Amino acid sequence: MLDRILLILALASGVAAAAEPIRIAHVYDATGALAEHGRQLQLGMQLGFEYATEGTWQVLGRPLELIGKDSRSRPDQVRSLLAEAYAGDGAVLAVGPLAAAAVLGAVAVAEDFRRILIAESAADAVTSSAWNRYVFRVGRSWSQELIANAVVAARPGVCIAAIAQDYAFGRDGLAVYRQAANRRGAVVYREEYGAAGDNSAEGAMRRLLEALVDRGACADKYIFAIWAGGGHPFASLPESAQAYPGIKLTLGGSIALPAELLRRLPAVESAIDYHYRGPANPVNDWLVTQHFRRFNSPPSALVAQGMAQALFIVSALERAGSTDTEALIEAMEGLSFDSPKGRLVMRPEDHQALQPMYHVRLRPSPERTPELELVREIGWQEIELPIRNLP
Image 1 (cartoon, helix red, strand yellow):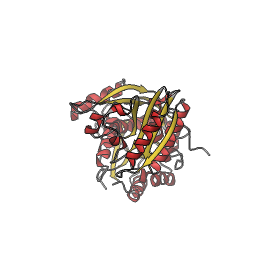
Image 2 (cartoon, one colour; image 1 turned 30 degrees about the vertical axis):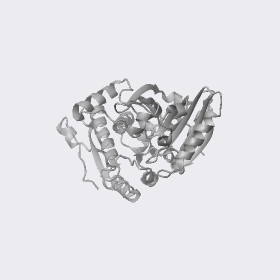
Image 3 (tube, helix red, strand yellow; image 1 turned 90 degrees about the vertical axis):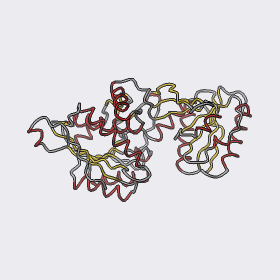
């Protein structure tokens, strides 16, 4: 567990200095496999509090204290750290964890202590089967990402063949995608499932290509893939795009394909959570400028998410005028707040922030690393996200 990271800055007066801090706990991966993800989320939180308070780190006339705790992606560690934050540290609310395996126990702890948890995991269970009234999510959900990917390709007359990994992540994700594509008038004609690291993807991709070639007249033809890890099915596509004329590629989940693979593929399209060139608003302008100035690089989606979480917290505290949990829940439900992605709305029914996504295209280039081209912003109104936490 990390020592407390005390970030109480710029106290305006002796009265402010004596005021009881508003403590926010951030349970994130400071070490382990997800440490880089955790670092980005923590950085985003810090930048968000800096921006929201104009550098004073004060809300309601009281200093903010951000307490960092290392979850190490362990569910038991997450539960104990949350209990420690609520009971021992006096945290008004907590943020985290990112790991899907740890989030289910975390939401139960929030309910036990009747304190707010802002979940960082994209797992759909956060706003469906595992939901309780103390849990909110500012980041996008897995379903939001998949529905946005359906928006990229689906329209009346479009024919789609799809492949995913043969476990819950892939099968559940493909079910969400299929339903969204069907609602938009497209049809998913064939589905295949495989495992990362084996040879099943090659035969599966051949069957998908054959299914689309045989389909005949379609407004467009797409192969959609949900994949994480090695053995990506696109690697088994023929070397020449002439072997599958008119068939386009679209990708959900990670778009981090090997550069050597991208160089020989036609353009690959996707919907992603954030593209730093996409949003046109003062919050994103500040974030991009500051990130380049301080780190000589653009902000990632996780930095943007962390910043949005901090802005949501400050907006809720100001709206509630109090740190009381019930007052905060009332303030958070339906709250419209600024973020790097523009104005987000916290849906009161399931506490999921409604937000835009970004249609991007990976352009192949034989001479250099393929470029990520921003096509357009997909407005949150286009992403028809079902409410799944109701009986």
